[in-house]
Image 1 (cartoon, rainbow, N blue to C red):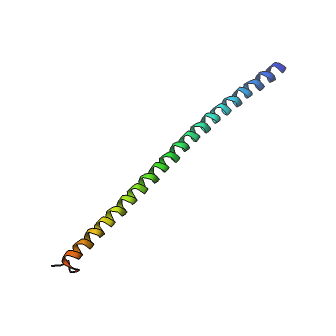
Image 2 (tube, rainbow, N blue to C red; image 1 turned 90 degrees about the horizontal axis):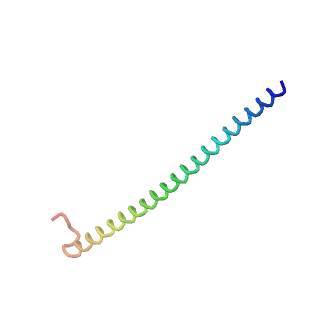
Image 3 (cartoon, rainbow, N blue to C red; image 1 turned 135 degrees about the vertical axis):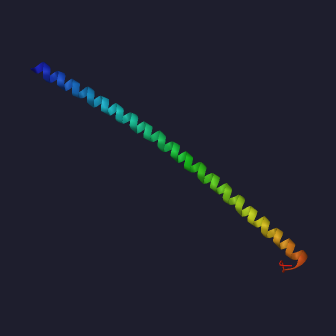
Length: 79
């Protein structure tokens, strides 16, 4: 009877260790996934910033061109 209790106890410890091992693996996988997502978010933020800057540059260039055209032909651009 004592042997059965010890065997059962050892079996439970093995299961507990297995669960802990699986839990550790899941935590590590989640940590890696989180790092990957954070990196992807940072890349997207950077790309957005570059795109926004390019858009602002384009808008400024268009405005400068319009100003040059206005200086040449006047404010009336309908003719």
